[in-house]
Image (cartoon, rainbow, N blue to C red; front, side, top):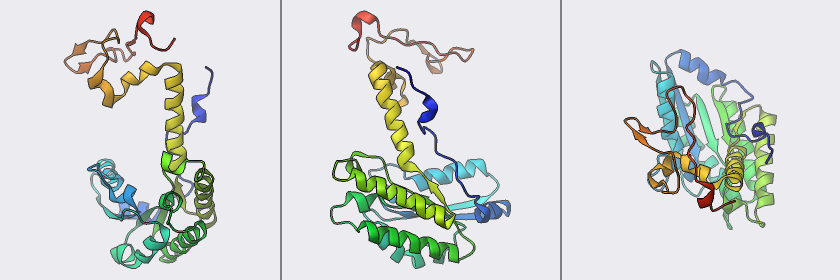
Length: 246
């Protein structure tokens, strides 16, 4: 199967705009980020939400800077309700950077806000943020998940992703293109599955469930022998006679 891996956005696309305010504050030794959105931001199911992970990464990258990432996510909301919280949950906190995760619930929820109401609220919210003259803005678009990929919702999901991108372009703010990133991950895994299903055995979360059919795996003091001392990969394989996919 021939394909060009560069065609798949397996890494996040770079931002188009510089984060001037946030960068200036980082250089000054103090910076504050407010993350507003729905359940992706708030977190659920005991999984650490992205603002918590972002804070950990920023503190590693800037160990001498006092950085805060304040989580103002509320599950189930989308742009119109989130906009109503801006005064208390955003502006009162004096952020240098706002990450606004938006759009998924408008597409997914049967009784969610309309496309027009959602995009109108996003435009108004971005205008308010930029009007403060001291806040950088990142919009985070939809998740690429089955709930928004049904025949009844896929067209609306694509339209929402495009609308968020267009608003960001017009207002000269950044977009974290989550939909494209997750679509890329999904496509790469599909290709791997169709080509060599057993390559999934190398996924970190699956190591404890190694199937006895997989050969050339031995334990060492530092774990499984997936890499030799020279940095080359040691091939794990399933003998052809035992392969389920020929």
